[in-house]
Image: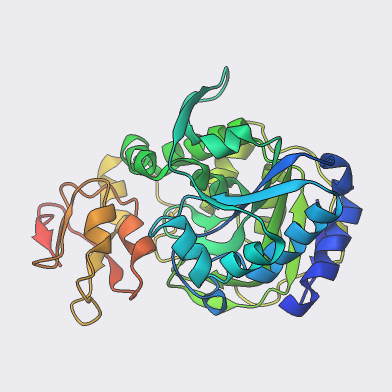
Amino acid sequence: MAISECRSYRDSRQAIEKLFSLIKAHSLFKAGDKVLVKPNLLAARSPEEAVTTHPSIVDAVLSLLLDLRAKPVLGDSPASGKTLYVARVAGIESVCKKYNVPVVGFDEGVQVRSKEGVYRRFVVAREVLEAESMINLPKLKTHSQMTITLAVKNTFGCIVGSAKQKWHFRAKDRNAFADMLIDLHRVIAPSLNILDAVIGMDGNGPSNGRIISPGFVAGSRDGFALDDSIIRMLKISPRFVPVASRAIRRGIVPYYDVVGDPMTYGQRFTLPATAPLTFVPFGRLLRRLATKFPSISASRCRRCGLCESHCPADAISVDNGAIDYKKCITCYVCQEVCPYDAVVFRRILLGRGGKKR
């Protein structure tokens, strides 16, 4: 696990080169290898909004791969929008054109099976399976359901879009969804994970939080080591991060050393309003009372329909600005895909969980 200081994206190449050297990443890729580069392309947002992996990080990684005479291809399955369009708005398409690297959408799924884990069958994008290796490029951001999204969460984008909604409905509980992410990450098994934390996001991420400037990049061959290290550096207890707590409980986090620049984050890292309350002895009743549900802000909503079309539980009606809380599974996909920060959070009293704004 390595950290390299990077206060500006102008220094991305130098910082990524340092990571490659510290963790001996050059040995992972051979001449002629097809290497899938998987950034975070959540939605069509500009680089300055800190929602997607920055194009300068992608540029540095692609150029290093080409220096090794590997054959990179870039792909993802965005939460909202087509891959090529999202990559264009995020500034990544132009980088790929510069190096003549294909941009692919994850549209065709192939079923894969694992012999271990809680969840053992996944429909993964064909391009993921066809590559000799994969570089995972997460963005440092909070996440309304998983508290924070790092290396393990970023591999959820290897699931084709149509199958993602099914997983949100199948693994409704936070811990169940975390177990699914852990098992998926182990199936995908990226060769290298590089975190873009030059600028990132806290608060109500992953698309509508507060932009922060941690000023570093981090890299590891093991995604669980990277996640564990970053969470602790930000002074977040793993108890608040379902993926981290489940990985620790399952004995998946390996022993690791941190090399490179000694970075600290001196500011308060604000968790999302939906972060789990670990001090409450949750039964079903108390969990329902403590849970914050999504609500549509009438003053911010522009009726674009993204929340309604992406809701796995079919609980949202844009026409009347209502959410059916009897159907809502608190996956917070509606808040994740809303480009206008129009989905806010509130607690809903039992017996009053009908259709409301």
